[in-house]
Amino acid sequence: MEAKHDITTLDDIKLLVDTFYTLVAADALLAPIFTARLGGHWLPHLQKMYTFWQTVLLEQYTYNGAPFPPHARLPVDEQHFEAWLNLFSATIDNLFLGEKADEAKWRAGKMAQMFQLKIAHIKNNPRNIL
Image (tube, rainbow, N blue to C red; front, side, top):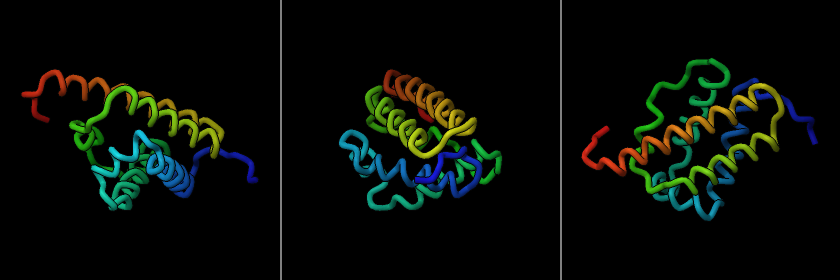
């Protein structure tokens, strides 16, 4: 087995994203949410995730978009975010080691917190429109 290294290239990002979403697609809790939203069209989502993480971690600005709105009305709660974050962290720990790997886990945790708060706010204030 190859020694672990940090996330430093777009190929590393693609390995992370592809491995992670393979696990998501097989997860009993998460797969139905993603399947309902994406249908059989995972590739556009994966490509968007490549550019998102490339921008966030490698500071190569290829992503333009707003990450939250597509998630705003998903039927998810704390257990979904916990499962997502556990899979994401485990994927990184299995593949990578280093500062960027740690940063990816930290950023994912912060995004999960923010998304949970925003989704809860929308559920509690249904008249609000994005």
